[in-house]
Length: 213
Image (cartoon, rainbow, N blue to C red):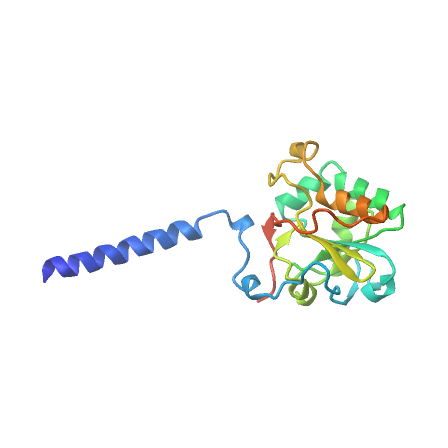
């Protein structure tokens, strides 16, 4: 009887230790529990509509760009993977280059409790060359099934043409950008050339979106 009780206690202890180690993993790369229940959109589907305020309080309606190519960039300035792409101005460089070609580029901040003032400050600090939209409620992020920052979506005339990671290097080091394959740039170049997107979906990486509960 004592041996049986000891065995049960040992199993319980092992289970608690396993759980503790799981919780102690990389918090940046794990989606919140709520995210796993989201119904993600799919390539070829209509992009969920939204109307969100930018950092200046101006309402941006996705429906206004139904005939355009639109990039949605899930954003959180406190995420090191986002910092990676803004540290040396790479994201601003890509954004400006494609906006000059008629592409609409929008950052979406679904981080809970973030305000327009927060977005305006970081937009100025980082010289962001595109709107930063306030989705603190998380409604738009959940409609897209966004799980990570920076997760990217490319919309072509109202339909999702690409979704996933910005590139193929899951590092948070800005020094690794130069040698990476930029999936978003590739998708945009193909769309602008009138071609089909050759890699329409990849696995997103980065920090989990910090949704309001």
